[in-house]
Length: 118
Image 1 (cartoon, rainbow, N blue to C red):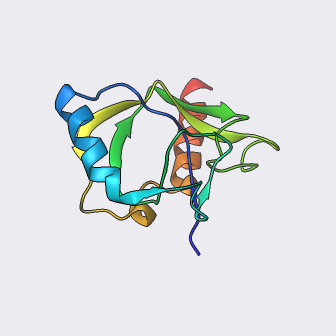
Image 2 (cartoon, rainbow, N blue to C red):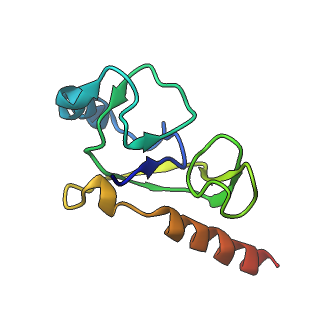
Image 3 (cartoon, one colour):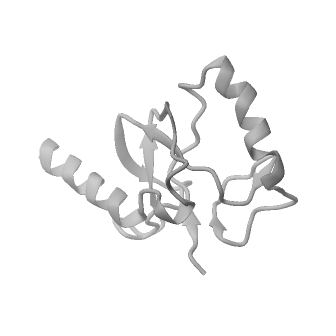
């Protein structure tokens, strides 16, 4: 089973139209608790089965004790997080959740950022 980790919570970039559309898109995917394929330390009011992929950009990738993306890959007890995330407006209906950016790719982004800073 392919597990899905998380790297951010995103609340910006959504238009009023998006905020009206998303509940309708996700309604049939609501589950009573965190889906077995999802690895997350964050508690949510509502959980969904992995289904819809949204494109999100951010300012940088940083270490995080909360987010589960690439846990222990850089530093023990830490995952990676996307700082200052913003929805781009793109619904990636051409991608399944398993096709979204992988933890390995997020690690590579983090390492590239460190090289630029260093």
